[in-house]
Image (cartoon, rainbow, N blue to C red; front, side, top):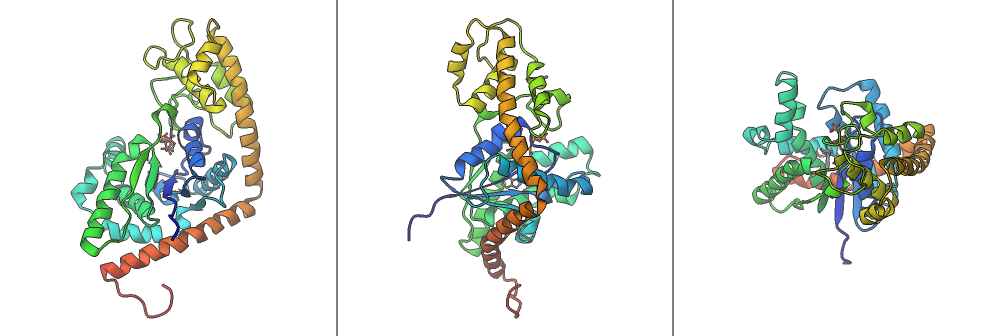
Length: 340
Ligand code: ATP
Ligand code: LTN
């Protein structure tokens, strides 16, 4: 047997009308870079998106949009297995089994659940939100993923996934690969353009703080030009003393591949304004083709749906084998007819 490539798996929820620059630099771009080296599984966790308040009309649109943006940004649906979570029923099925192996107290200790319920109150929190981490564990374990590239905020969910994999393997026999978290590079963290103390997010205070990748490139340029900068005039990377300028340098470096040191040198003696004007141009050159390619994909939803159906088919070929193994090991009686 030839040595199999390691498998990586990750997902991003369809909870906004467009990915923002932070999503791109912090996640998508790193996935794209990994799809050649690893056997990649990328998916859109739409079942996770309904664990919090959601708009049914927007959900389907957002799912297609996120899919298009991923492909436009370089995810290759031939190389990577790329699909929508709800198209592969094994996710919900394995999640149920894992729910039955997870302690109530154990799930109650998940900080994301605690944070979200603290915000909305426990009456607004659903069983679905409580079970978010076990559904995520199912996403990962179904594909026997070796590595899971995620942000620091997902570390605890990954730990639970490892615990559940080990628990299952110990109790029912070797079944799951125990995955490792690959925490995405912190250098790839992008901050809010109006408030560089906060990360750029879809729920930021001011819309001017984030660059939505589907917005008019002119608006993206304007947001860069009106970004909050710091006291002083010197253009240098110093996350503590100069969070605004440092954020702009990170973005600049990420999009052009020029190192921060090289940029500091190029802008020595220049004003913040110079940096912003140049970066605004870099931004326009970056978003313009990305946006055009996304629009092209969205213009042909049948083709996009075909790509996703193809991805779901490839995903199911793997997921159904794992689920069947799990059902057998747990002692669920196999139905007599062929297939399930
Ligand atoms: P929210 O606004 O609810 O915090 P979000 O914008 O952070 O959401 P998520 O769907 O939670 O988006 O994240 C998708 C991916 O993008 C994650 O892997 C996350 O680590 C990454 N990401 C999100 N925001 C940033 C950011 N500002 N910088 C770098 N990476 C980010
Ligand atoms: N919870 C993750 C999204 C997610 C995920 C996954 C990531 C759902 N299932 C499986 C990696 C692997 C988030 O909010 N970023």
